[in-house]
Length: 108
Image 1 (tube, helix red, strand yellow):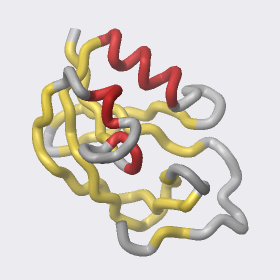
Image 2 (cartoon, rainbow, N blue to C red; image 1 turned 120 degrees about the vertical axis):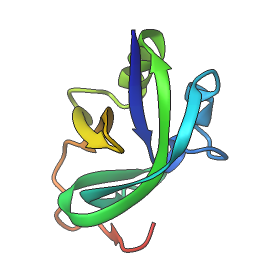
Image 3 (cartoon, helix red, strand yellow; image 1 turned 180 degrees about the vertical axis):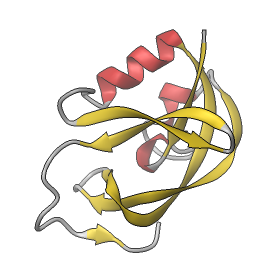
């Protein structure tokens, strides 16, 4: 079964965690509205809001989705959520902790 994922931050091409997507199919660059991005130190996190996030869409398989769930500590650190992007149902990882007193990244 194929899945689609919106990659941002360290999962994007050229960043340190992109190796999780190396065998996946790049679809296009994409813009997602309805989220803010925050600086969590060595990686960013997104949180629902009125901002815009630029990233990349990939087609992935179930094994890659499971690896990404592990990386993102799905259900704890991040929550995997389904959203519509370019008429596709796409998985996105949303930060699951409090963002008070965390620096918002204004342009990403």
